[in-house]
Figure (cartoon, rainbow, N blue to C red):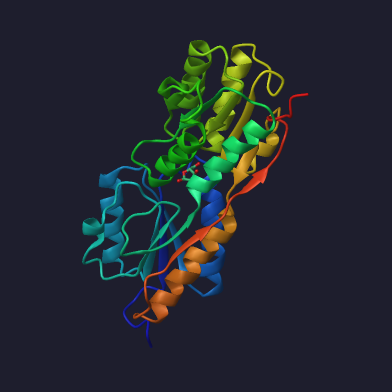
Length: 276
Ligand code: RIB
């Protein structure tokens, strides 16, 4: 059979298993791989290139049939010679690889447009890590919306790292520095929860005094108080599509590279509110 000598196994590398975004993504990949009778393996890399390379090595030893990678550090060279079909998911690795992503720049613009539409006049940004392709695109979208505004200054941006803890500190820094901030676009939901905490600790009411919008659409955002407005990614759909593309490539070695981009969608909850 086509799979002679192979393991009938598909692996997914994720950078942060503690962020609920990635289990939601993994769930989808697992469902599709299982439907096609593959065994699913999940590897958590902490965005650490040494861990990533060690996993790739081990997976190669095990003759894994295909790999889906979410990474900001792996380069085309690192996976050259793997001899295994690979699909990049959520973050672009190399133009020569098939990928499934979302339209991060447009989504970020829509987030800022939402804040403008509800009357926010000083809109700050907590960005994601510098080296992550989608964080760069979200920052770019934010800048496209605000850089020509008279009030705008780069100090309205604080760098986050997609984790909760630093986002709380970054938001506190922003809010202490600029008392006039009335809108905040945060680059992912986990940091959005950190931003809510920061506002709470400074006695700033959300959404009365500060509207907060984040990005991802993980279920955690529904459980906060106030619930988090977000630009929701089709997380399940994207994971499932990446698995389908990978399986097509495993079963038909000559398939052309495909780069698919999904749109994100505004989900309005209580952390943003129209000013009256
Ligand atoms: O929350 C995790 C973030 O990292 C998401 O926004 C996702 O797009 C990923 O790259």
